[in-house]
Image 1 (cartoon, rainbow, N blue to C red):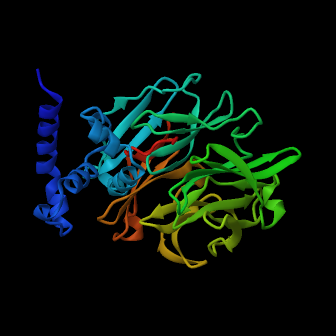
Image 2 (cartoon, rainbow, N blue to C red):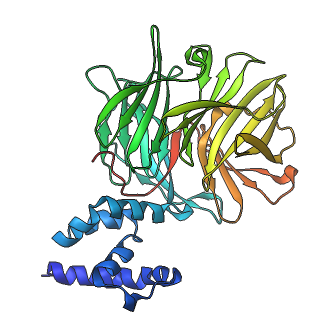
Length: 381
């Protein structure tokens, strides 16, 4: 029989061999560290699923792996491209795929069972951050926080009607504030009810906050994108619902809890104008598309409150960017991976000529999905 202490020793020796090089590469000498610190440094580098299994090794490890400091450091070290997974949902299955960047494709899939009640996989993924997904159960309109790696989830709906999401009317953004509190911003638009609400994981409750900018943006005449969190700010694209209408970006400072408006990139407004926001290494980028029968896509980056064009692409056949979502990967060699909501994956090589930029990689029909990073961040405290 293998004793817990022996099992702990074998696991720790294996991880020491695999991850001590990472510690040394950061200029840390193992001999200079106390044992507790060595254990902490090693375990904050192991995969999220191994962390979950390691909680059963001994009481000391369970206590260590449950601290907020450990979760925060482990999360920061997990935010690398190799830990990204693609979650795809269709009418029958929910599957998780690793990404093989060398071949621009997916690895073997594993079937994931939803840990919460649903009807025919009718689940929409609204926002994602640090391994957490904010999802909506479409048959009940309930909002949930869900970590697909640990399978933990948290219902956000309350008896007083908070935490219920209506598609095409509401908008949601997931963020973390300076106190490491994960929060959901819910822009709620109903007949006679226009409001902004914030859910706090720390206190497990909703509260109302004022919307200090043009109130007409809360009317049904405007569409809101999902929120994109970047550098302490949650960004939304707001469109007026006709050609030539107003297009702006609404910024929400997550620590001051204040809104402000900045301009949309200076693109022609003679046809359809749409944009998709992407956080790349804590810098905000936007894919902005314009046109009618042919679409032109430009890549912009936000510097201060102004947009700088990074890349222009030649006209392409109509691909409505309403079909595109923030299922986007960034790789250190400069490649972008962009997936449409219908599952078509594109590679954009930033150092290539514009004519060589867009290359369809693979195709899945009828899937919904998101990209998430495997972490141990919990949807509840």
